[in-house]
Image (cartoon, rainbow, N blue to C red; front, top):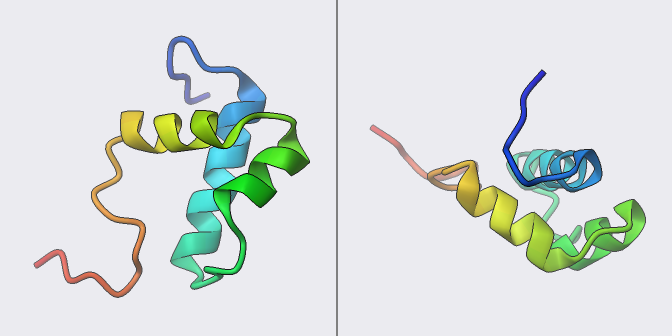
Length: 64
């Protein structure tokens, strides 16, 4: 199981859903909308994205 110290499972799950939506090109699904569904704040989602050090959640960015 993947853990980030200081995070709860709902925040981590909300972040995973947000990142997956972004990779799938679903830009209409916002941090706010996902956070509300999972009962966390959008700041929680944003902070976990930063802590996971995801270089970019834009599927069209060339990493090469």
